[in-house]
Image (cartoon, rainbow, N blue to C red; front, side, top):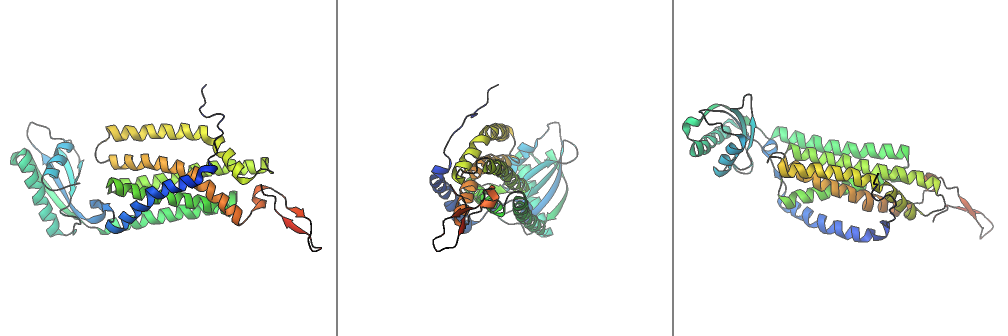
Length: 330
């Protein structure tokens, strides 16, 4: 059986400064642009109207055709979903950047939907069943809950890694995950993706994916710290990354294949999710190797933690008649 990178011996830690420069080039301009112009939120977050229609006649009209007609009629980014039978559709749309979420606004949007559909298919091709206002309050609650979920994942990571390894491992993992969130937000801004519930779900999935990858590397690091007590931490981190590299290549490769398939074959609604997940796999792998490990190494140099590595303190010769304990570092 072929095992890729079975005997890998790459010095990842030595090129960490180049990795810092690369991530800064990607992240900083995107975050600056994000601070200036903000994100492009979907109707779920901004408010608008929900319109229920039924298509008529012999010709079956699909969701893609309805979405195209609405785009041409000025209702950009409208969400079209089957509702009940194949001829019933739920349309969530807005006029302008932010919907007011009022009955007056929903009436205007319903009129715009009717005009766009009539212009494309004719007045006899559909029937308006009803309309409802969609307020932005729910979207605000969803944003808040997503933020709380991310913060709770940080806290859980710190607690778990502090209990399983040591507190500094948790700090390094949280910094790496924060890096992934910021770079993903920058990528969303570069691609001008509309932030919907599926995009929020993709970001939360990236967080879990990155944490899982980092913990696997740190778990191998913990084992190697006890096995190779006289090696320096930088060498142990390199050894651990190389030993887990075959698993990473196999896991990430199959996941990338799935997200690329979604990018090629999925519809407009799911494609933003696929874009964020594809980029998230890359940045999650990158941070596990080039951010989490070097951050742990930096913390180790600033605040040595020999007990976490199973290294007993070595007594150095006293200079003024008093022995002093010094941890055995590489």
